[in-house]
Amino acid sequence: MRWQLQEAKQRFSEVVRAAQAQGAQFVTRHGEEVAVVLDIAEYRRMTGAEVEFKDYLRSAPDLDALEIVRPGQSARAIDLTDPR
Image (cartoon, rainbow, N blue to C red; front, side, top):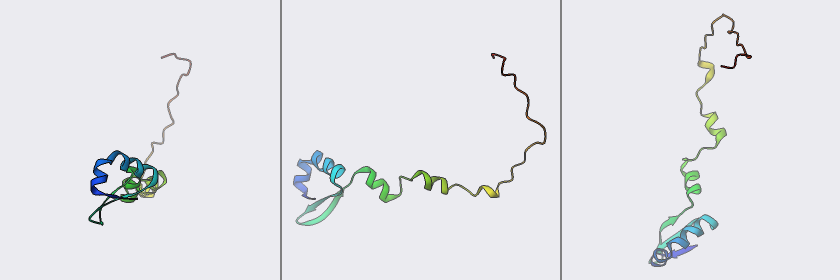
């Protein structure tokens, strides 16, 4: 939807609600698009600020390059009957 600047200023809450419900809202001045109001989730998706969990996991460093040294001794015994 397109909003003239003056109207968008007067009805800003409505512009924001429309951006959340319907998508991008364009603001015009003298018939020329000068701004756009977006839902924050859409903005984050477009800018890459919001990363999906699977992409976050894929961005982890290569664990094959790690050298993990574990001691050869057995794990200690734990008394499960002790209430401490």
